[in-house]
Image (cartoon, rainbow, N blue to C red; front, side):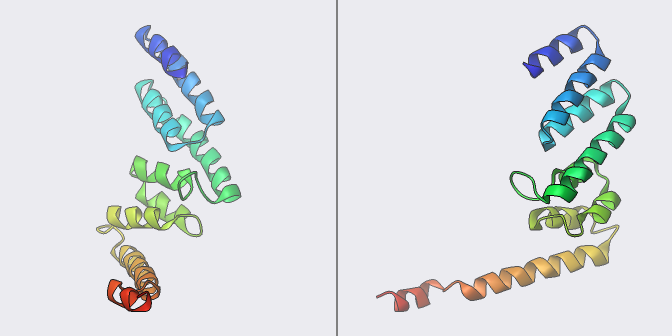
Length: 146
């Protein structure tokens, strides 16, 4: 229904109404997809900066309360990364981001935050080493399980 209404409003050049519907949808479902759709509508209506401030405030509140999205870390980090706001993502990531978000953040900021990116990569490598040390190799598993 949301898609239908937005398509009708867009066809009638009612950009502000599209933003209103997308904003309401985002308030009801704070997902990355809803954020991206709000961003797209608000950019078309040339009001993204104001909408972004409110949307990020809501995502910050969610992140502090929940600490994770449906699939991993908070939507806030994904939204900031999607916006290309790497500096803000670095500020918000501590204590919130999951490993996948940290890796994406490091990938996006190797040039601007090389020391931070390296620290992330080293931590992720250490985690992989720890996990692999506890997983038996196929040869030792074959010996252990005749």
